[in-house]
Length: 471
Ligand code: BES
Ligand code: ZN
Image (cartoon, rainbow, N blue to C red):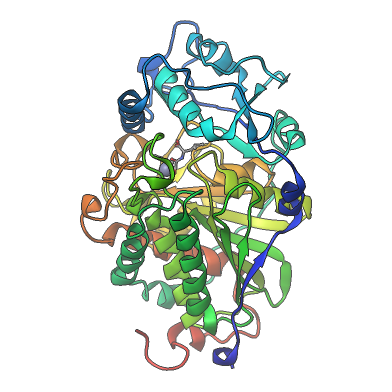
């Protein structure tokens, strides 16, 4: 019986992560942008990539304020990189040719392509460099972290094209009773627990502790799902691990369906490991959605055809670093990832009741499929928005050649402007988790419809909880 199965929390270093562990340094490279900030900010001669859609006004303001308040005047903000503790930053050619880009204190590039240039800087200056990019460009400068110089070089090329699907919506008999099980109180409880850590910053003890709490919680909740296990994906450059729950497929286990969201939080770019960063919306709310899906899959003892993996990524807020390592390790091992959904910010109803699907840095067939799932199972409408840069971990998967998409809480220009500060609390998202409910339904629907129930799975399991009444 599933209830007798033992769930283990393992610590491992996989594939590319193992190679990363051997690497003396970490590298960072930029995502190619197909959109570069508000039209209002566009300089003469610079293409209006975002076609008039305002992007990032609140993050920009908050980061500029934080940088202005904390930066010591007259002090060089980006000192030369030391021999050890260096990283590589890649900046797109469009940004470098912008007057603001030319004034960034990055020094001489160590390598360049037609798409981007790579600079070597001190790792502990990453947050400040990001802040300066925001300040100078008046938008977010998306960038990627890499563990080796070779990875940074590879990142200068165009990403490989994605292959996923075909995606079909034909499991209503399974999905409908399962999505009815989503509980606002469960979502709220997870958000409150995660926001209760001082922060979940990638180098903080509390950041590692929060990841461990998630691992333990997922292991417990998934006990009823046959063969489920939880692992910590350790990263070589910082203490916070990523967390991966696996429910193995019983017919096509090599085909993997990924649901993810970042587990770290940040407060400004000068706060670091000591700053209060509840990250209730960004992104305890995404982890809460994943946790609720795990609860329902476990409670139903769901047995999928394909393997389901639920991932909490470390170090997203400092350049998508955790997910970049995870995605690269899957790429390196030739994994067959059929689809990745990202939940990053689900509980702030900035644009009313809808699920906004990102349209940039995503796989379009997967996004079309997600819109069908939203319509069929969530009770809210599907809408579209765009970040204009690689704003979250879906971009790491896209970059590694896997089909990925992302569900977001609002239109980009009405997003929660309390994120990345001590004000990103549940109270400032309405004091409840109602807005996240539809996202949890989407997570359950995505897992079941994409992985499909195994032939041996019994439909009664979708309606009847394992081991008695549900909580
Ligand atoms: N949750 C945000 C991304 C986001 C913010 C999406 C607002 C949509 C609206 C994410 O945690 C984040 O802050 N990402 C970074 C990415 C960067 C470090 C590459 C960002 O946007 O600055
Ligand atoms: Zn964030």
